[in-house]
Amino acid sequence: MSTQSSSTPPVRRVTTRTVVDMKARGEKIAVLTAYDYTMARLVDAAGVDIILVGDSASNVMAGHETTLPITLDQMIYHAQCVVRGVRRAMVIVDMPFGTYQGNSREALASAIRIMKETGAHGVKLEGGEVILDAVKRIVDAGIPVMGHLGLTPQSIYKFGTYQVRAREEKEAEQLRRDAGLLQEAGCFALVLEKIPAQLAREVTDMLTIPTIGIGAGPHCDGQVLVLHDMLGLNREFRPRFVRRYLELDELIQDAVRRYVSDVKTGQFPSQAESY
Ligand code: KIV
Image (cartoon, rainbow, N blue to C red; front, side, top):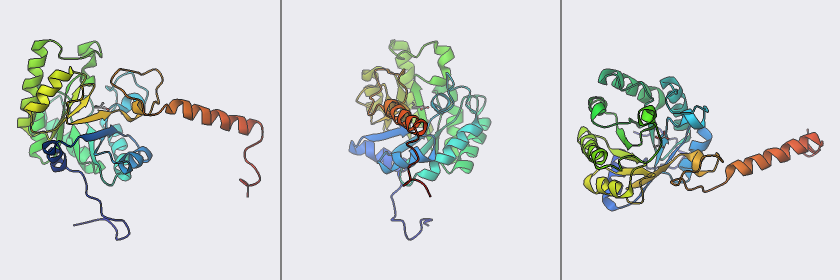
């Protein structure tokens, strides 16, 4: 069944199956975050495979210091905006802090709200063994789940630092175990954030589901960045793992300065821009 009108050419949507097949073929998976309709449209049209409505919205959209404050209602609002702009990419929504850690029933209820109210295609949860019941329950309900291990920003107050995780063998061993358990529980993909490249390679080789790295080196099956970071919208934030493809903060400020000057000097609007 198709809901596309006859005027729009059909587009083959990226699914859980697509990304697992991409890994099997050795084709890399490109993932970016988006939080609103306008950016989601651009990112989708440029060929990104998965759009993550990350709880990094708490930082880059709302200006909070961490991802903890963002609410389920706010994530649902961002996801609704993104879904309206997307035709091809798979849209995955971060389950915000406090909406899945309590128990698996609560987790399922939160995931169902996201799916029903946004039209997104899956959810992402942070953590391993301790959230396994929640992952299983959500997957059993037919909802695709992306896992997230390594530096999990919702646990930042436990870690006390944004430094690389799992450098020590004990934590690395736990991460390998968690990765296997998440795959067994039915996750279709796994984000690995800020861990040594060698460990990410081992986990990637060990799993049949794709790994999506951020600060986890070149051996993952795909890469994800926060859109605002790769566009250069935050001058102060320059970690090693972010490649900036634009210095958009400068371009925007320059454009706004010229606009302010044009208004103040009476050069805007001109006759041609008037009715
Ligand atoms: O919230 C987010 O943007 C994320 C990615 C950085 C993986 O979780």
